[in-house]
Length: 250
Image 1: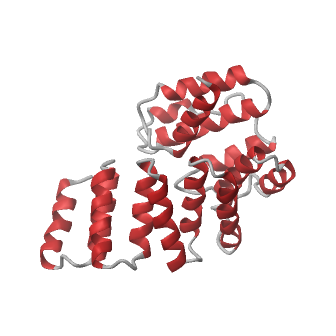
Image 2: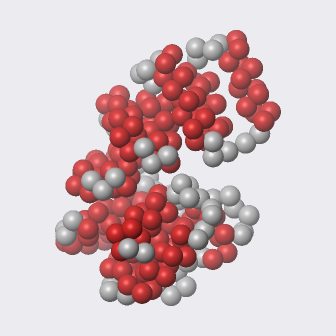
Image 3: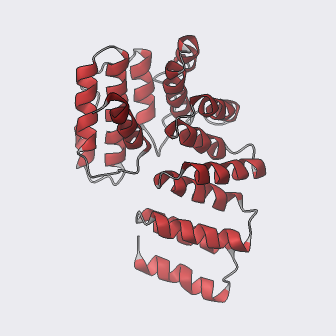
């Protein structure tokens, strides 16, 4: 985050301190520097000035996820969805939160709300939703639903620019990609600031793939490897990995 950018926003705030859009911009700048508590405060102040801002509710809800504060995250995301029921993000992040809190049935229902929105767009959000639903359906014992949702992802499915790993993960679960050489190790050091996030996401899902195919030893080894990383500990896949480790007593 650029200090000059933050200073620029705060200078505007001196003139219009009640503008919720400026509080949103400040929160996003703080988030970029991983200052999650400070970002929550900025979003909260913006909502104090205008509590009907769905963008602020979504942004604060996402930061509450990073802080592992599930009830607060769900409250904000549900409020955002009431204001903007056709917003993909409002349902997607509800699904993420409910998965991380262990409420798999409600998580699946939230991600299912994403599917008609995805079909009305360019298709780039299909792979992330399919991966989360596959994960949930398999844990709920709904194998046929899992196979159906993952079947919709092909090599021609558009990649999501902010999360390109999901298509290859979907193909792995589908059986159209091999586990050997699946993880791009160079992502940790290739200079892309999001590279470690992609690496963690791919590593977790490969660990889950091995576990679902009965190779618990390989799965546990990957989870232990993730535990040692000091990068992107706020990543959803990292949180899932820690949950799985706790359940397995690792």
